[in-house]
Length: 97
Image (cartoon, rainbow, N blue to C red; front, side, top):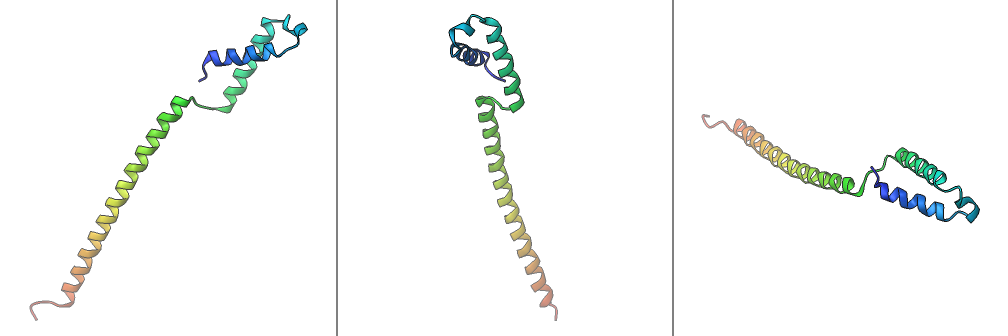
């Protein structure tokens, strides 16, 4: 989900921001930071930028297809309406009379 290097970088920044006395605690604290960050980020249910871009493209193609289908439906509906109207006018004026 997340690039581990990014998490390590964030954990390192937090570690570096600590006062010198706490830095001596060292790796344990950094590992805890990583664990906490991973747990909290997992709760957010976020996606990577790449996944977002892929889904955006899928959505765009789906919208385009929907627009095409709506236009086609409008054409078919208009054609059906024309046919039913011309059929009604023929019934109003039968030619054999």
